[in-house]
Amino acid sequence: MSFKELVFSGVQPTGNLHLGNYLGAIVKFVDLQKTHDCIYCVVDLHAITVWQDPAELTKATREVTAAFIASGIDPKKHIVFNQSQVSGHAELAWIFNCVARLGWLNRMTQFKEKAGKDRENASLGLYAYPSLMAADILVYRATHVPVGEDQKQHLELARDIAQKFNNDFAATISSHGFGEAFFPQPEPLIQGPATRVMSLRDGSKKMSKSDPSDYSRINLTDDADSIAQKVRKAKTDPEPLPSEEEGLKARPEADNLVGIFAALADKSRADVLKDFGGAQFSSFKNALVDLSVTKLGPIGSEMKRLVQDHAYIDSVLTDGADRARVIADKTMNAVKDIVGFVRK
Image 1 (cartoon, rainbow, N blue to C red):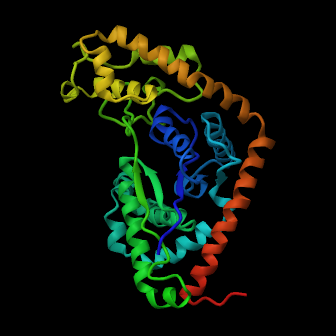
Image 2 (image 1 turned 60 degrees about the vertical axis):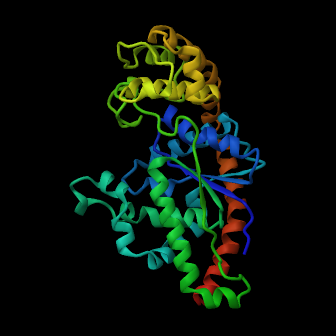
Image 3 (image 1 turned 45 degrees about the vertical axis):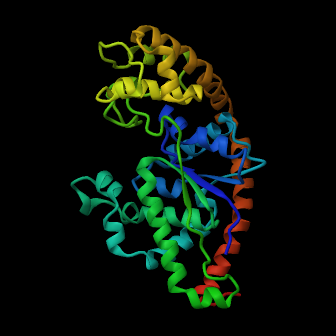
């Protein structure tokens, strides 16, 4: 059967949103709302796979919501909500836990990275995270998901779970009038020129809020002076910028800064190098400072204003959850019928 095109994506409320979150996810969200119906979720259930301070989780949930709105996402035309307000996510995740195979989850590299050597001490939630992610997408029968490189494996698992559910329950799916498949095979929407934004202090590491150095990242709430200082202190190498993309290989810091400029300017790396090839990093960084402050300054200011207005932010989340629940409940009612649960 054909499925209505729908985009779903989520961001964890773990505080300190930075340039990597913005370029790796939020910019794409803003663009997609021009062409698709979109559901954007603050995935607070995912956040608690590792312990969170309750007060900080509340604060971070509102901060992510403020970042969505300040960046240009329209919560009236599209759905913005926090995951825990819609019970269908957790309900479908349990059903998917019973569909997914242990061997599939054992292959998930992100669990191995996050759990580290002390895997026996990791939460069951951290292990089953990809099953919940599949439920996040498929409880809305979403067809497209903007993903970075580190989430592609989880989306492939969501596709596998959808396919196995469709196969396992093919007879009842058909008897309930859903044709050959109830769940779609969600497609990845790969990001633009800065899919992975790296640390400003080490081009081999992803930009992260957990890095002890604040100079490793540009926070979305940084003011103009902080942005300028961090860009100017960003690690580089002594060679001038190359004129061709090939020249960025084996130069991770240069590649990172060019990728950031390209993403903020909505250009290709090749076009950036046409403008700055042969230039010293000092002049390139000056241009990057101007561009970063112009693009990020208004977002940071608006975020700071919005996070102070708890009533407004919470009303956005409540309204979004109400609208999301209508879609999710319709899916869950059908799933329960397909699986054979008795319901009123």
